[in-house]
Image (cartoon, rainbow, N blue to C red; front, side, top):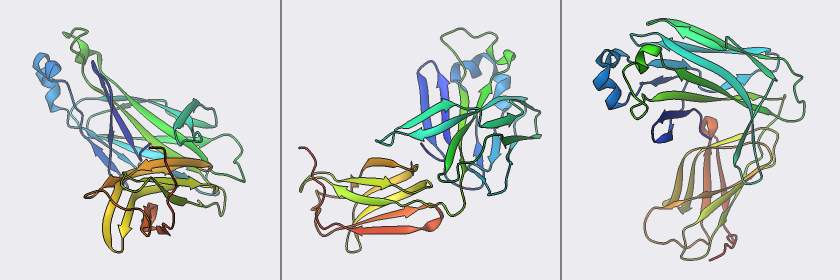
Amino acid sequence: MTDIDTRTAGPGGWHAGRARPGAGWRLRRAWAVALLATAPGLAGASGFSVAPVRLFFGEKDRAVAVRLSNEGSTELVLHADVQAWSQDGQGRDRLEPSDDLVVSPTVLRIKPRAEQVVRLILVTPRDPARQMSYRLFLREQLPTAALQGTDTTRLPITLTLSLPVFITPARARHALQCELAGTEGSAPTAVCENPGRAHARLGRIDLLDGTSLVARHEGSVYLLPGTRLSIPLTVDQGTPGLRGRTLSALLDGGEALSWRVAQPLQTSP
C-alpha cells in the first residue's frame, strides 16, 4: 500500500493510483465524460488538498490532525473512518475495523474555498513494544444534484483517500534486510524482511553492478513489523547475472542501505 492510496469508483470498478510523497497533496476530481455532458455545471469543480499525507503520533500525542482544503466551486462532502492496518507473512495488506482511534468529525461538509480539520484521537493504550499502524479513509459522497439526470450506466467517478497512521513507541526502529532471489539469466526479485519494531518504507530498490544499474523497483512499498515481501525488479537492459552484484534500497528520509549478493536465493524455474 502506498503513502496515499487514491481510488476512483465508476462503472468499471475500482482503479488505484499513486501520489508523490510530501507534506501535502493536491487532488483533481475526475468526472466521467457522460456525466459532464449531462451536467456541465460540474466542470467548474477544481479539487481539494490534504496535508499531511502521513500521520505520526508523537510519544505524548493523544491526537493528530489532517487539514483539508476545498479549492473547488461546489461543496465537498466526505466520510471519514479508521481501520487497523496489518500485513500477513507475504506482505499483503489486511484492513480491519478498529475502535482504537476516534475520528472527529466523521462527516465533513466543506464549503467552496474553505478548510476543515479532521482529528484522530487515541483511545486505547499504546503498545510499548511495537508500532501500531492504521489507515484513515476519506470517502467522497457526491451531491444529489450530481446524480440527477443520469442513469445506472453513466455514473460519476468518486474518490477515496487512504492515509497511513503510525503510533510508534520510543526508540522503535525497523530492521530491514534484503536478499536477491532468482536464477542466472532470469529476472531478479528482492526478498525483503523487517523483523524490527517499526515500519520501513522503501522508495526504490536498485540492483547494481559496481555503479551501473542492472535492475530496479521504483515506487513506495511499506514493510510493517514482522513482514516479509518479495518485490520483482525490472531489468534495465538484457538479462543480468546475479552473483557479485549489490542490492541497494533507498528508504524514507533519505536513508540508504545496501547488501552484497554473494549467492542469490534460488527460485523455481
